[in-house]
Picture 1 (cartoon, rainbow, N blue to C red):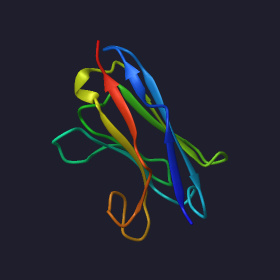
Picture 2 (tube, rainbow, N blue to C red):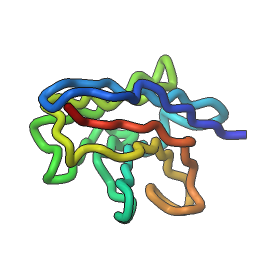
Picture 3 (cartoon, one colour):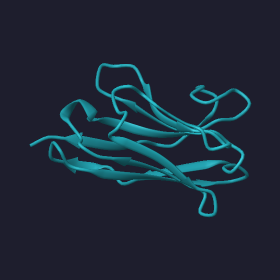
Picture 4 (cartoon, rainbow, N blue to C red):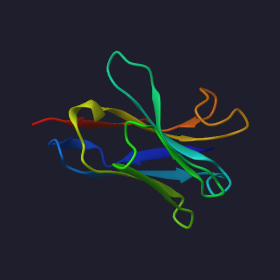
Length: 120
């Protein structure tokens, strides 16, 4: 059984930083593309960042230069370092692991989500 458990969300002031973690269990991780998605109230879920099994990384334009995705295969953990946060980053952040259906598919693996709120 595959499980993804996010942590690290919370309330932060504009300009602040947070680091999200996603711990994966089960027979996945080092061979899986991993991603972080977010969903703000009233909006569709969107891809924030991804890292492939080969190490390629990709970011949404809105977070380029501010967010960094990384993975530690020895710990089965993927991270999202978020700097210079602004209120538009407020959302529930989800960890996602690709399977045969692909990254971001509703049939792939998802964590339960962690709330990030950026507010003064």
